[in-house]
Length: 239
Length: 289
Image (tube, rainbow over all chains, first blue to last red; front, side):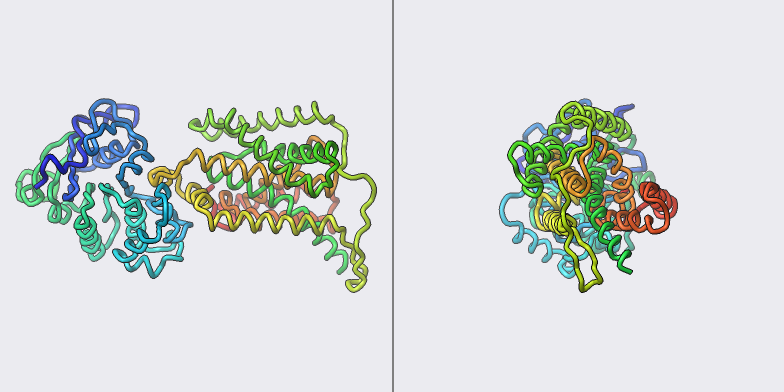
């Protein structure tokens, strides 16, 4: 379980959206370096919007986001990257005409010094990418593209990795594999905060989970407890 | 046969000019997402900056080329910071119309400073090289230099785009703007470098055009249509496509003079552009349009 001292991210009482009516209506999220935190919930619950708001892509009207105790409410994405937060969007998460290697280089754009050791680490984690480092990312399969996207995000050696539906559109076999990789990444001491549609599987590997509905927290518990909660199961996990 | 080779050379010269302009148009579209209508007048201004260096410092047109390129790169960045940067977050159509306005401003300014008469870099006639082995084929040294220097600049752009971190960032931004932002790529810095390259290459196009023909305040504006045609043909947002597109349009325009009056040359470019937009709007290399 996470203790207060290791809390990386602490978003409290977030209200905000794309300019019109608020999509987030009092969202609370926390994540620590040793956790895999999963956000589930029905369509339109504001799961992706919450991630974007934390990363500075959606305007937060009221509420506060702390990262390692510092206020980062409405910080720009570039500042988030500099602080060690990496974000992988759900769609269009690679540079299609750039090679795998160039995609990784772009992930490390803000890093000074030699990118090679970091890149080698990522190739070790995703051996498939090493074989295809000279291939344009746009010519790869959905599963491989997801690896490129995660590899790109990992280039900054993040403290917190934010993933928006990393298994969307993948085959069952690749879904299992992706969750395995996420566990490996977390085992390196990188906190993971992710939104997932495959709620059952995601909660099974989660340290903690949040159930969001209409932009606010509905439930919050450990992964196994949420899975066992009959109300959650009925409402969001398809019975 | 000889005629065809001769015309092919003219086509390559025109193609070089168009490529230099089209690379900039294509890059600016890819990264800033608007059709830059002042690009033709960037070419003109570049040519006149070159003229000033030739007149004031007595440089030959070839030495004036780097000076014109640097001068135009500075002007392009200044125009971006003064005008385009302020409306960057608005709709593309607003940027497009603004660039149209900038085109008119530049053209008027050029007329005001340098006058509206035709001018030339060097007076007199340049004697062509006669290649007797090729049946008396005549090649003007200027034409050879224009094509060779263009190739050099293209190679330079290629190395920049594939070997440097900034060049790769430019391709990344052109590929996926949102992801570039999320990756922490500094968009404003990339945009400035885009204008430096776009402005410098536009100046090269203008100087080449001035060396090949003469200088006139509308020289760039009348070349803008084939430049756009080249960018669209190659796939807008794809600098390599712009080079291929420039060569195809240039050679097609010159080749058309074998069959129809030379006055219809721009119409040939226009026809290719329209056909392309109907049947393959993404261009030869899949562009971002």
